[in-house]
Image (cartoon, helix red, strand yellow):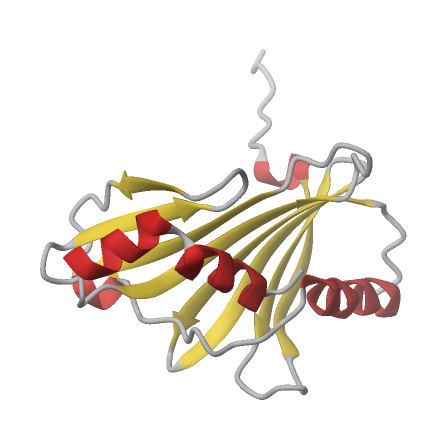
Length: 175
């Protein structure tokens, strides 16, 4: 699958067409994809495309898994500068993103099995990025940022392996 597939599905839906008519100033500010690599026969994949409406200071999310469902997302005081516009002209395939991550895992000699990938498309500092959290076997995770500004030379700008236990603060009882 690729981003353009999801955009075409969204633009073909009556719900999104109505949304666009009612909110002509809306723009895509993020996208979220959950890719289940563990349950191949019955994956729990999810996809959401998020649109910000500056005139109302509201964020709307379109879930694309079973049809198209719109929901309003609470922004809790975030202003319009927080929701930067993401290019809808990006054309990336999730297999390409996975390959970049797998190649880096191999380079760093990370042998763990990928279980689930959470990928977020965002625009920061004038560039579009995939910001990923990849859950791997043995309670590990990878934090990865991929710069999408120069196709086909996408590059990882940040890559870090963490353990679930790194995130816990473990304290013992004092005697």
